[in-house]
Length: 128
Ligand SMILES: [Zn+2]
Image: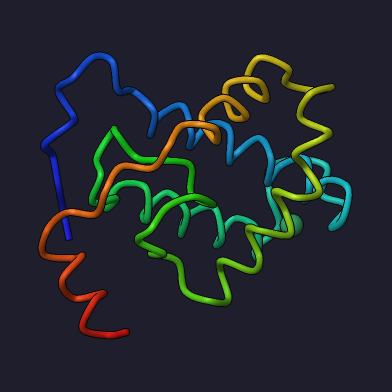
């Protein structure tokens, strides 16, 4: 699914910013846990690539909510668990290594999530 409806709004530049933040978190995690000196190990780079593709396809466009508050749940169970572990570990450390990014990330997580696009909401309702 592809949506561009919010992309031209200058108030919403969240996805590019968020990708940078996620990238920084995965890098911190990979360096500490997989002992990579440069870049990412295979597993983490696959995960980051996955995160980038999910962001690009986000039905909310640049108005996307924080992923942990989102109603869409676009990640597969496996990837969601992976990224959850990484964020939980890297979150507090981000304040030390990338304070500005960390604060923006925390603020973003406090915004209420937008509602699902109509079609998706219906699919979800039927599934329940
Ligand atoms: Zn790694």
